[in-house]
Image (cartoon, rainbow over all chains, first blue to last red; front, side):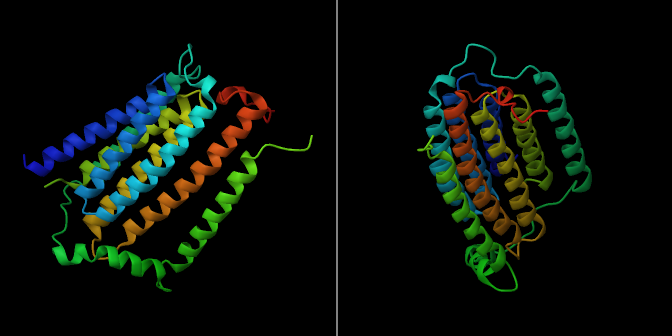
Length: 172
Length: 102
């Protein structure tokens, strides 16, 4: 086994174990911390895949913003944080069966369709250029400029929508 | 070298864990956290396919950026909804929010 494979296995195990804690832990706050750990593991996978920019974006957006937002929501609904009863609804077994079925299907498709695809040998120059290439792709008219603009409108709409929804009603 | 299917298997496992969280958790905030896990699994797939099958065009990474953007918007609106519901119903347990149920 090469070093890369060992690192891959460690990061994957870390990510998946944290994810299991996220969905099973009774204490919501601990779930949120495990969620941050899982995001960090995914960022590690991005680095292994030579997508350093995405790893940084993942850390900034997911760990820095979304997790904090979730922790805020947990604090604001504090009474629900620690429940004495089970963290699951009355039918977790059927949910587990569905999840295992989907997982088996996805793994079967992945392993049978791409059994021996190795990473293409690209030079460092190409990959180092991939960030600037990404930037060019985002704003060039024959690539992603329209999704880019739509994404900015979506973020604005989400900003206004979140404020409008969460604001307490004054009249009534 | 790490084969492509290893990344796909990790993503599939992460997606299924998230799916289990979405269908089995009671708390709405926990359901939202599980949705974030599923979005992350999709992103791993996108980046892995970009790196292994088409590294010369940054299609997969750009898609992943859009997914991150939409996930941020979704988290903001979702948590605002949960807080609004908590304020009016005093509960964030998903199965108690059934006033739209026929």
